Structures are given as C-alpha cells and as structure tokens.
Image (cartoon, rainbow over the protein chains, first blue to last red):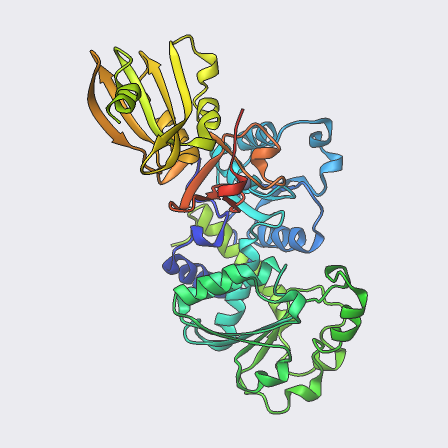
Length: 303
Length: 153
Ligand SMILES: [Zn+2]
C-alpha cells in the first residue's frame, strides 16, 4: 500500500490538484528534465489504448526514465491465467512506479493496495481515468488562467461518458456554472445532478448548443455514438444537432476554447480546426505535461 | 402477553436472544449468521404477534454472544432487530442493531465487472445511506442498494 497512488481524481485534495497543475505548466515550459534518471516505470496495459499509452510513455521518456511492461494482455503471462495480484507483486519488485490500464473496474484501487510502489490509474474499465481529468483541468486552467467561477458547456453523450462525469465532479470544487447539452437518450444521469444540487452548483439543460455557447468559457464536445441508441431512427434525428461548425462560433466570447477528449468522429467539423478557439490538439499534448507532473508527484521528485 | 414475553427471553440460561426480526427475514438472519453451521443449542420461531412489527421472528442461541462482525451482518438483513444478552436466565444487556459506517466482507458487489467478482478480493463498502441501506464499493465505486444486497457465501 502506497499513499502516493492516483486511482481516482478525489485522491487529490483541491490543493494537490492546483499543485500538480502548476507543476504541469513548468513541464510545458521545459519538457525535458532528467528527473526520472535511474528509475524504472512499469507500463502495464492489460487492454490496448494507444493514445493513453503513448502519452504516458512520452512523459516518462521526457523525464529520462526507463520503461518495462506490455501494451496488450494477450502478449503477457496474464493470458495464461495469472491473477492481477501476482502480476502486480512481481512488477512491484522490479519497478519504481506502475502505470496501469485494466478493463476490470476497481482493479487500480486493488493494485494500489497490493503494491508497495505507487500506482497511477490509466483507466479501469468504466470506472476512473484520473489522468484524463487532470489533463482536462490543466487545459482549462491554462486557457482561462483559473479554474474558479467558469461557465462550462458539455455537449453530446453525457449519459455514458466517463470523461464528462469525472470532469464535472472535479470542477465542482471550483464553483462552476454548467450547461448540459444532450439528446434525451443521452442526458446527464440524475445521480450527478443531485450531487451538483447538494453542492449548490448551478446547471442548466438544453437540447441545442446554440442556446448557450455565446456566453460560455469552455465548450467540451464528446462523441454521440450510434451504438448508444436503441432506436437507429432516434440517432438519425439527433446526430447533426450535436455537430459544431465554424459559423456557430461567430458570436462566442474571445476566451472561449473548444475541447474534445479525442478521437473525434464528425462532431466537430474540420472547418473549426483553424479557428484559434479550437484547442483539442493542444489538449492532447497537455496530457504529456499533466502526466509528467503526476508521475513526479507520485515519486516525490519535485518540490 | 406475559407468556409471550417469557417465550422471547427467558428460555435460555446463557446466550443471545435476537428479537423483533422482521418475519420474512428470519431465515436470512439464520443464514448470514451461519447458525446452520454451529453446534450450539438454537431455537427459533416466526409468526409471533408483535404490537410493534405485526409479525416477527425470534432466535435464541445458547452460549453464543454476537461479535461486531455478526452485528454488522444482522444490520444488513434485519436492522430493526433487538439483541438481548442473557446470563443466568436474566437479560443483562439489550442492544439495538446499528448499521455501521463501512462493511468489510459479508456483502457481494452488485457490479459483475468489479474486481471483487473477478478475483479473490475481500469486498469493502462505505455505507452511504444507512436508512435505505445503500453501499458504495471501495473498488469499483458502484452502488449496491438494499434490494441487490447478496451475502458472500
Ligand atoms: Zn465493486
């Protein structure tokens, strides 16, 4: 058991969130720092996720660390029936830090209890993905200069999107105003709305984003996937409603930035890419800085 | 009335009487406490009239005193139950069952994709609603509510 693990975003206090964001901005200014020199990081991807793995491995390389591990459980002993506990016990002996992605929910918390070295959760099934949340927070902080009192609009699949749920929970510490824009089938689950009401956080719900985007600071887009609809006709009816195109941005605020966890399908039209308010590619790059900061915090390497 | 009371508490010399068990939970209480597996002298009954509960069940266990884990288990299936501790045919202590803040082991997580249902991991829950018994899994963070509570074998 190691208390420097990051399994869920609420493992960090509000102060620790700010501390890591400030550290991330130092890595943005100066990404190559030899802080992990002589250290070995185990990168254990029990299910493939190229995007997250490359981001982590870039963060480790830029810090001068070495990597052991696997990118897919089919090439590891896990396939031969080894338990997660035994795999973690083995790796615990070899490495200084574990980065783990696993399809089973709660696996990261369990691994953090089995290991003596810190574990960073790179996604445990439908449960948590705190480094994604930290990179979203960093991007908001970096583009707005603060996390406090922002007007934030979330668009698309608000029902199943783990990313948006973690993000609203994390932002709820910073007195935001939320606007949820989604088709009926994919609206924000009641449990999260109750949570916000208990915390006294204002939110509104809409079927179309035009109703709110002119006054918002952050427009967070997500994919609306056909598979989520029981009735394909319902999907056909709404699919174009949740597509952002450049002309819709004419009257928006200057400080508005458009985020998207990527990969996108068609929910942001390519004509938005050249707009200075489009920020999703920088957002992906911020993942490296945020992960560098998280790794350093887990190993007490800075400050 | 007096006779009924005698029946509830006086028939054992030393041990525990669990009273005011909801009538339909009697066999669940026997099961969660594992009473089928111990050698102690046990008598139980259901269908007793109770002014408070309508009908209730009672269990009397000779020479057994419930530990904290037992009380936690009881809280999950019969939170309204009352525990009487008997010494020399006298009730020396009465205890109400209290739902604890957390529950370790005992209950299965409702989420089939949870690590506790995939590997040999002891379950752990925070009790997020004591009145309606709602449990939040320490691992997968999903809620197991009252009607989905299953006891680990
Ligand atoms: Zn669970």
